[in-house]
Picture: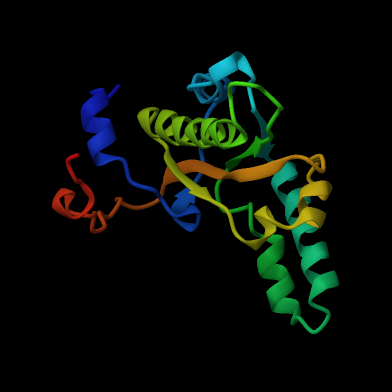
Length: 187
């Protein structure tokens, strides 16, 4: 297992189209999800949950996305509908991180939403530590209420994102990062 600091310094998203099989084993998936649930969570509210899309579930989810797209874009070309149908099929595993808030006198909704974001990042980091490529994405369908309902989300739930996980098919490329001098101030 890589050194934690080196892992964090070198972590890089892998595009789903640059992922292949194998994906995580059942025990690795359990580890990833366990780490995803181990985040700051003031009030012990667990304001997130996970939806696992693997195998045919990725295809069924794509059918939901494509059906909503076709309904809302009646002039869309068949090729565009096919693109929507394949949204979750590049990586062998996709984890949806669902966010919701609960009324609490000391934990505002914003903090609960940040906890869901921390959960998504922990999932990305855990998958990377296990040697997989990972990428946290959204897209129009992550915000469309009809798609979300079709994927089983309740009216008061949001999707923090889809985490695509698989084996990288090529070496990862670095991208420019902001200079600390551009983003750090001292008070």
